[in-house]
Image (cartoon, rainbow, N blue to C red; front, side):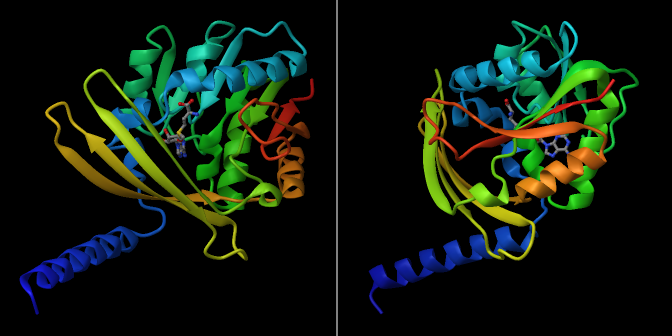
Length: 273
Ligand SMILES: C[S@@+](CC[C@H](N)C(=O)[O-])C[C@H]1O[C@@H](n2cnc3c(N)ncnc32)[C@H](O)[C@@H]1O
């Protein structure tokens, strides 16, 4: 075997080992993106990209809440990108499982109240005019966990208040696909490839595998892979579970200039008085 093919064989072997390590971590391992890679979040998902959808969520919440609406609790608020727009209208309290993502959000939204906690169990001991769970709801990968998050939202929602759930997909809108993106910061840059697929259409999850390329200020390039398991539930399953949690719920489609009409579905709820 030539030196060249020997080297190639070793490289391929290394890549296979990396993949094996990633899958051996198990489907519910902590996503690196929200923990050790959290500082890179604003380059993967810049806050400015959220302006149009945040305006749509705000309009739905204001139109659904039966009170003059001031306070808002966001569960799974991540880097606080939606909050950076919604805070112009609401007094916002933000909660996320990851201390590292909360640190990113504190920088962007220093005027907001922040908590580290789990949306399935947290009890803040007060209610809010509005509840919001954006894409973080996708990390509820079983009916039991999804119902726990709905219960948390219900308990923290004032009677007559509004709640909005925005999963990435319902079963009816899911499609396997790839995507890519990233951006340049003042000193560092990130690019990513996202590969979304459903290994077992019979269960209630799908997976997203990511490859991140991260360029440091001195030009060093790092590569990381990440594996996310997300929940997938049918539209009627969502509506039945929200009703069982005590909400009056309806589904609606997001209107957004960059999203194909009919592909992104939300659940808007009222907690009855
Ligand atoms: C895609 S990010 C959210 C980004 C957010 N929409 C924004 O505007 O920046 C998903 C977040 O869900 C959080 N998360 C996942 N499971 C959670 C749980 N059980 N309780 C609270 N947060 C959770 C993760 O830590 C992560 O920060």
